[in-house]
Image (cartoon, rainbow, N blue to C red; front, side, top):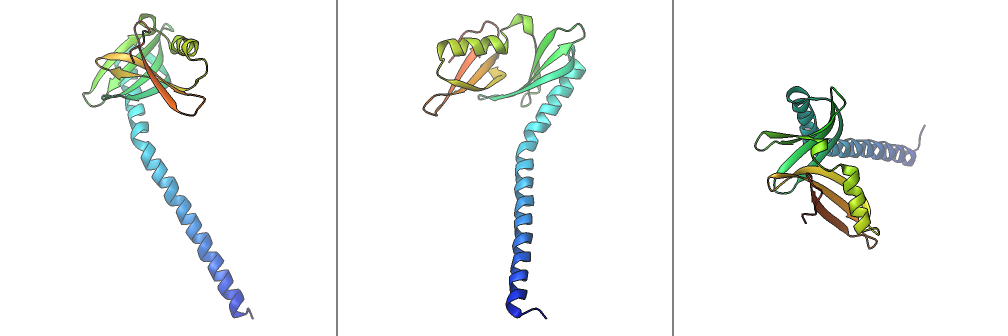
Length: 160
């Protein structure tokens, strides 16, 4: 027969395991729900781009919220041309940008690194700001603070 102390210890361990499993499940659900709106908007943007633009294959997703919430995709057309499609879910407007009409993400990255070689770029996003397409560069300085700079899509000029 199991002693009373041993039985209580086993019961405590069982409840602890149940609690930890439940806490893990709740945490996963919270993070899943938190990421769901962006995933839904990315999916919606790619579906619109595939149906209403020359884009036949989506390669990259971007999100920018600078007063106007915008989602963008980079894709390839039938004849292997590169396009960007920026969608504004609030106004349900979309803008198709041919890559040849603007500056690429790579060129923006090089321009930023040439001016601020000490900063490490963490992310580059395409989006909509003040009625035009922009690239936003997010970088981290050596001191750990984040820096944000906006570049115009069409010519790569620094906006802010």
